[in-house]
Length: 45
Image (tube, rainbow, N blue to C red; front, side, top):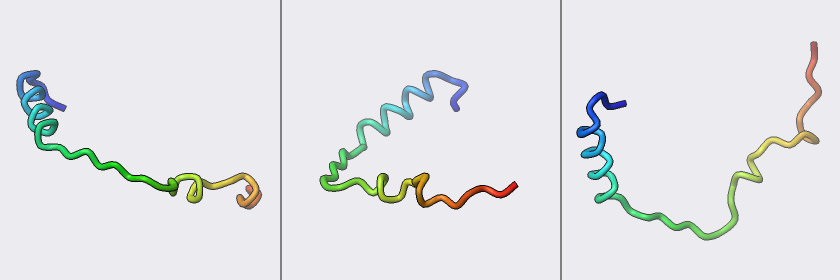
């Protein structure tokens, strides 16, 4: 994204120093929202 490596390093450093760690406990929504083969209707040609 950045042509200048110094600008890229500066941007990453600012993001890193101002970032928060967000820890979420509990069940993931991915398995529930993932399409399954059993529930997928057959494809028509």
